Amino acid sequence: PPAELDEAFTRLQVTYDPLRASLLTAAKSSFDAGFLGRQMPDLSRLYDLTLLNQVLTEKGKKTIQ
Image (tube, rainbow, N blue to C red; front, top):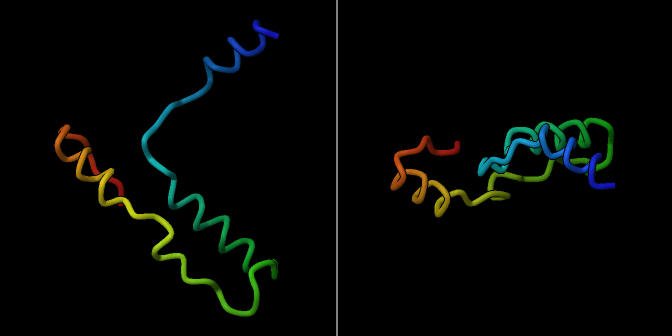
């Protein structure tokens, strides 16, 4: 229904941050619970933020770590 959607969108925060830390925390929790095998997967290359950070730098914005 339109009224519910309109109200829901007032609480939505649009961001260019891919929330890397949140995903890594969720992955660690999944690993600790036994869902990702016996060895923690290497997630260091999961995100390539090079292009995003280039644009952010050009726009004078804070880069993503």
